[in-house]
Amino acid sequence: MSDHGIVKALGVSGDSAFEMVDVSPLVQRTQIAPKLLTALFGGEINSIFNQTRTVRHDDLQHEGVSVAGKQYSEYGPRALTDKPRQLSYDIGSFGVTYNTKPGDISGRRTPGTNELMTEEYLLGQLGNKVDKAWVKFEEQLIATLLTTDSNFTAGGNHTTYDYFVEVMGDTRANLIAGANGSGQVSMQLAGSVDHIELFTEQADYLQTDLEKTGNDSSMTVVICGKNFFAQRLEIERDVGFNRELRNTLDMQSMGVPAGGFGSGQFNYQWFDSPRDGIRYIRYAASYDGAKMIGDDDAYMVPIGAENFLRTAYAPAQTRTYVNTVAQSAYAWSKVDDRQGTTVASEKNVLGIAVNPQLIRRLVV
Image (cartoon, rainbow, N blue to C red):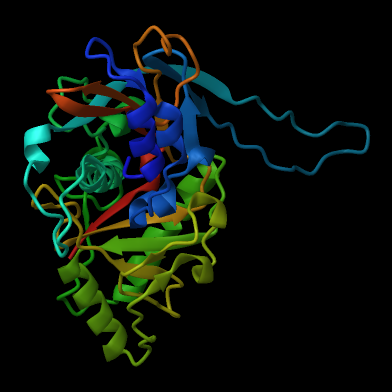
C-alpha cells in the first residue's frame, strides 16, 4: 500500500467522488517482509484461492498399509484407499481504511525539511502504517491457530471454529497424551527430571502423528515464550551442550524449505540442541499489546509439512470480483477535491489447522 506506484495511480484514477477505483493489482505487487510465523508456515504453497465465501476441505482419514509375507501362489494384502470427509468453513472479511484531506497538509512542513508537505508524502506515511498492520494481522492469524486451535476473527462477527474438535472429534485435553486441562503438556523445566527425554518423547509423538496424517517434515522446532526459552537454554548449558546463541536468524541458512518465505532475515534468538535434535526459537511478538505466545508457553511443530496449516481466501464481494478466483488482497481508492483521498484495503481470509494434532502445546 505504501508503494509510490499506488500513489501515482491515485492521481490518474480520476476525481469522481461517487465511486471507489480499484487498485488491487498494485497491492498484489507490494512486497512486505514477513514475520517469523508467516515465514515458517505461510506462502501460496499452503493457500487456497476460492471463488466463494465458503471453503470446503476434504479431511482424509489415512489408512495405513504394511508389507506382509505371503505364499508364492498368493498376492499381498490389499492397500485401502483413504476415506475423505468434507468439512465446510466460512471465510471472514477484514479491512482497514485511511484518508488524507487538504486540511491535513495545509501549511505543514514535511518533517526534517523546509518543504511544504504533499499529499503523496502523507499517503505514503499512512500506507506504511497500514502495511505493518497487515503484516501483524497475518502473523496473528497463524499464532491463533497454534495457541487456540481456532481461527482469528480480529473482533469481527465471524464464525469461530475449534479445528481440533472438528478434525479429531474430541478436545485436545482429552486426546493429547500427558495434556492438562488446557491441552498443554508440562515439561517440568524447574524440576529434576530428564528433560531431554521429555522433549524427545514429545518429538516422537509428533513424528507418529506426521506418519498417520501422511505428512513429511524437514525439521522439528519449538517456538518458545521468553521464560520457556530461558529455562530450556539454562538446561542446555547445565548439561554442557550449549550451542552458540544466535541473534540474527537467517532462515535460509537453517535448512527450512525456502519455498515458505523469501530471503528476509528475522531477529529472533534461537539454538539447536544436539541431544534431542530440536531447534528452539525465542518469540515475544505482540498484537494490540498482548503477547502472541505466552511467556511460559511453547509450541512444538513440524516445518515443511504440506498438510498442516493453510489459509483460504475468498473474492471481494464487488461487481468486478464476485465469483472470481480470490486474490490475497484488494484495495480501492476515491479522490475528491474537498474530502481528499481515501484508500480502503481488504483481505478475505481464513486460517485453517488441517491437522491440529501436529501442534504439541508445552508449558514450563
